[in-house]
Image 1: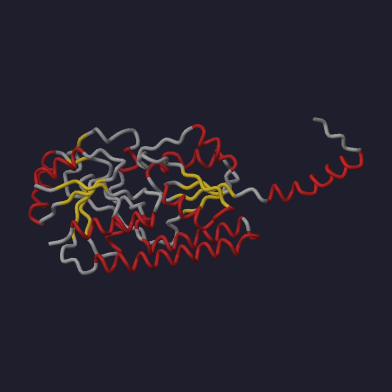
Image 2: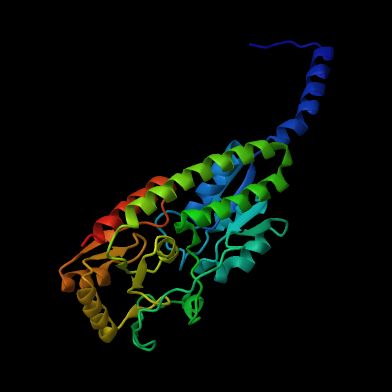
Amino acid sequence: MRINLGGIQVRKLLLLLSLLAPTLAMAEPLRVFASVIPIQTFVQKVGGKHVDARVMVRPGFSPHTYEPTPQQISALSSAVLYVRTGVPYEKVWMNRIRAASPRMQVLDARAGIDLREIEAHGHDEHEHTDEHHDEHASAHEDHHEQDPHVWVSPPLVKHMIGQIRDRLIALDPDHAADFTRNHDALAAELNALDTELHTLLDPLPNRKFMVFHPAWGYFADTYRLIQTPIENQGKRPGPRALAALIDQAKHEGIKIIFVQPQFDKRQARQVAKAIGGAVVAVDPLAADYIDNLRRVGQQFAQALQP
């Protein structure tokens, strides 16, 4: 079927479309890349419909050895903001990420946070297995490596989302009210979660827990716990260090070894078997941040019961 429009009607339609074009262009959401999934969650919650939040480290991959895909590097060309956290892959890729989009702003989510150093488990630095010591190991060579996992502490997340809100407002001031409202709602959820976790964890007499990869240090600091890692600076412990960790776990009554789903669990299972304990997966990279950290708190509370 053909529709016959007169010349006047066609000119009016074209004029209308030309007037609407700038408005339609302005309605495009801000494309923002985040280093890891929880940061993507925070950006999307604060930005709402005005933001297209994307993640660099895809689900199931480790932030320690990740290599961005060509499609991700290409997509960076239209991004206005990248939110980094200092995870190890960024030490290798950050210059290339900036080069892919020279006009893209970079926000360091750690700015203003007193960064902690990752605990050492005390094994001989020369005694390690090479399976996990790959071409990215240079990211771990600093003997005073700063812990990038700032997002596992709700109070620190509150600080981070304030920075995200301010940067989004600077990029898109027309939607400042929406960004502020979304920020305040998320901050209230974080306050409630923090209170809940303190109620759950503060009374526990046992304060020490063992993890394979030391991702829970800021969580431990916030809730007065002590993290003992099996892995150290990207290296697995050798036989002597492993034996010392097993002795330590037995002495301190540790029965649960927490592991991250993105890492190999074999050595954690070896320790758990030796102490008559179990391996429990807790994910610091889950997208459902509030519910996930609530589950993690409950798992920690159960593991630390006398």
